[in-house]
Length: 446
Ligand code: SF4
Ligand code: SF4
Image (cartoon, rainbow, N blue to C red; front, side, top):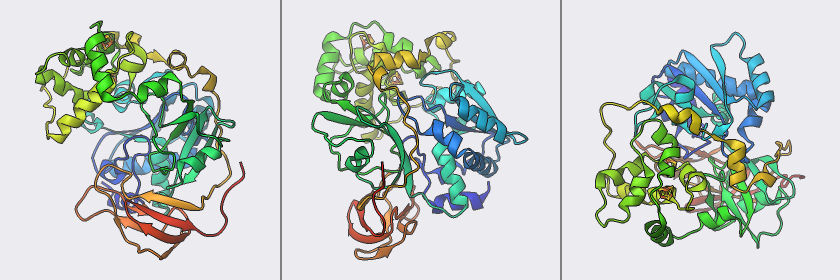
């Protein structure tokens, strides 16, 4: 393990930029033989990673090489869809003579699920309930690799790239200071009226509808998808759990399409969402079956693609997972892992068909990276935007900060991530967020 790299990454506050925000310094402290950069970007409409692999290709490769050194990996793989032709060409040129190769993925969903990716790229099945590490792999996001390269140059994480698209005038991908209010970010894509639209934070499959547009962008914000209020995705994602469960009990026809299409089931894992849906109808349910909800990656295939009755196994699983986790119940894995299903190859969901099924074809357009730097008047930086404990403020109200200054640190002996000022200015308030009023040039022309 290269402790210098791990330390630099920890100091810079790098977390997984494409998921739940797992602290990267912990992830790269492991020993593995393969490091995979996840460049699939399989969520429809998102356009961050495929562009960073062109505009920031050198630094993404630098980040990958540093992580390979830190983990002792002998192989580095950048896995991206072959349809990202410019990125493929650029990376192909820049990786010549390096222990890094490209893996060209087909255009299917969910190619970017990390366990699907490990199987596609390395032919290894991650044990159910386990991590890629258990299959000798570390899987990292493209922007995370860029942030690792920056960390080695002493530059902390202060910004994030976000695609703003959907029902907007100018679909765009922008680099935003952490803590920028979503409502301001939307204006950069030409959204000035938000009365009749709703915004999904993340991709259409896994993202959530925001209840409040004043919330800030964080280290894990990758997409803001604006949709008309009546769009069926919005309707689906805003159902109450009570309604979801009542509807599941009364209309699930046990066709098992959800299980047949489930990418984790197809990897040989024991999750069968139709059995969980069946369990809802029995007061006790089979607790072993209900526990398999913990194996769900919440990809959304079952509810947004597979189910002919428009039911929501994913949201049911999510609710069960919350309950089980609250009660400290874990999934105990079997000793012998099943192999991936032979029919898996034929059940990959073509992206174009998924986009059509989601009713998003008219929004499937480019969202080019803007060169313009944007600086809001104020930023609201949440103390918790990663997995682990909230960061502990290291600044006081009224204090002047420069962009990149440490403003909150990992609590002692805890899992967490440092936070840095995303703008130059004055700390106005400290609560669950650190509010900073920006000084100097603000705004940006879009
Ligand atoms: S696909 Fe829908 S109807 Fe069929 S078993 Fe699953 S939840 Fe029930
Ligand atoms: S969301 Fe549905 S399809 Fe995806 S892993 Fe969970 S159960 Fe399987």
